[in-house]
Image (tube, rainbow, N blue to C red; front, side, top):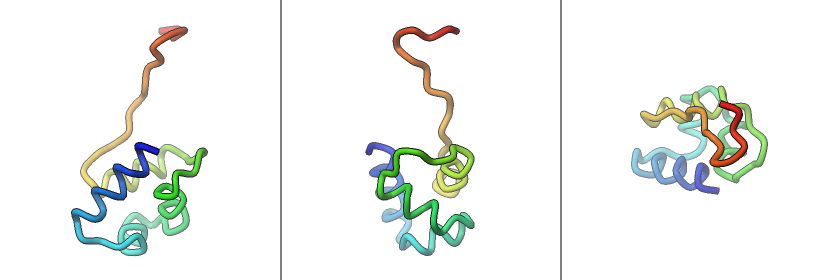
Length: 68
């Protein structure tokens, strides 16, 4: 998935292994699942990893059928 590729690329640019970044985020199991592209993850946990990489995931608007 695009998110897993993004996280993997940023982690590698920082010179960190998966366990190192996961440990820093306090999310060892969740991080592994994120890079493997698991379909259902808690967004607060994803944002903990992204925060360490200088990013965050925001609300994504639908292109059709959006109630707002």
